[in-house]
Image (cartoon, rainbow, N blue to C red; front, side, top):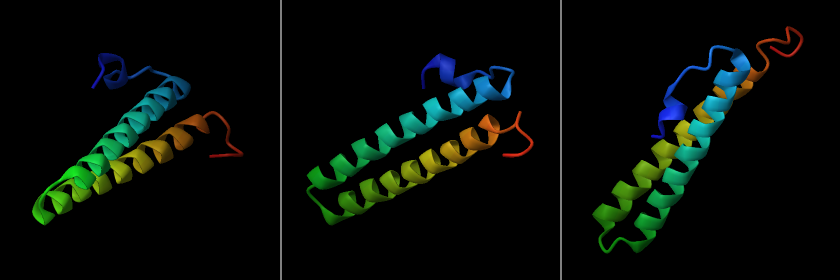
Length: 79
């Protein structure tokens, strides 16, 4: 993970940006795992890569949700 995505920015807006970067990275890893599953030669490997892809996809969604929550932290009407 790049060092800048593992630091806390201090403000909710900065932290939301970090969460979005983490989500993008998780989506990239999910895509790579899906590709690996397609290229796998055994069913065991396909299932394993598929599970990894599912985990990274869920992680991306979690980071997106967190970014949205932080992005609205300064706005009481949208929190």
